[in-house]
Image (tube, rainbow over all chains, first blue to last red; front, side, top):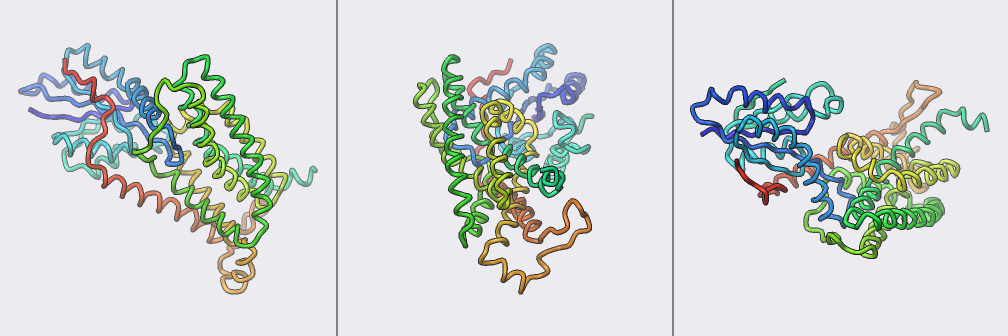
Length: 139
Length: 254
């Protein structure tokens, strides 16, 4: 069974990857194991003394970011696992792929940080560069 | 007064101070906002108010101290090194092993967390502002004044801003490196030596009346911060063995 990582950042632009998987679900011999992942950007190192609250904050933001993607999958009746992590987006995505021995990444090229990513979708770029597995970019 | 305000150097200095303030008030604001979140709603406001008051008082005191101390030889050097270190710290994610306040703690625990954090984190703001003010007391006082509403009203906004646009932090850290570089070479001990032996340090830039001169120290300062930040992040990244999953305890496949 194919294990697919779907990074999601919570923006509307970024549901294309999930929509693709829903559309193409019937093409697979066996439904792939889908892992949704939202990566939260950590606070700068000068923030101290509020670790537990920071974690709570990140978890809540992560839950918010995953809502739309989860709804799409739930409505389509598809199974998935969801994860929330903290760190630099591309590195964390790669880390998940390696740790959980996933086979493929399906991700959007631009998300929330469309302006901040400066036209090129820097997270997607970096994942493309670092990944050992196939990466499907969905516009 | 008009001459003062029409001098572009003043506005650049002010711009630098505003950015330094936003970036370095950010950590205070984050701690205050997060510490307050653990409290029941009616106490949240109190925690934010008292935390902000404490931060402001500490800044006023530290700023006055800083102004006097930066006149002394070697202290600009020390300040520059400290500022550089702070800038790099901004780029490295926080420590995992820290013990924070516990959820549902009372008002006093929250205020205590804020006070301790305030002391440490106001220091970085003061050094940054003092460095960016470059001996201009008007700028210094302005910088101080600006940081106050930022802390009071800004905490939740800054929290969201830094979350959505992490580039602000990178840019801010680079600016700190820039300012640290400048402070380093204006230390009374070093000024003459550099003028004599490293005259290439100062670059004449045909951007008058905006700036006529920048220095390699500034450029290198900014660049070094970015590089050091990336190196440390990469090192920390490779040390991480386990994935972090904040949703792990609610896993279910339907």
